[in-house]
Length: 176
Image (cartoon, rainbow, N blue to C red):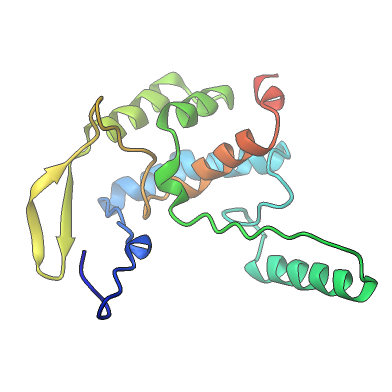
């Protein structure tokens, strides 16, 4: 941990960005990510409160909706409750097996799911800083599994959409 200010660790603000080979990352975006996002949009599987990672959804819309809700509550003098949920690092908290199972439920070939699973299980990670690249590596193991595609992966946002859907909705529409 590098201290930014004296006596301030700010460990909660650390983030690891996964850097992938550009061609592999773009191939995953085209072959998996885009297909998954469009499938979820076409079948109305996205929750209306989910704006991130969806086509034709803008961050200004969610801000406007929030401001309007606060103003209506204030003017009408009705008691209201609001929850702030910033899903920082959510891509690193995606349960791999659940994401792969949901992909299969959405009609992706088992071979595609196995390929992604093998990639997650066998990728060796280096740490690169302004001082150079580490010689020490880490990877997912059965005793210490890594979760999700990581920040910086083009498949992170669509995988989060299906996990968000599984958390907030019933899985019945996926299985039918």
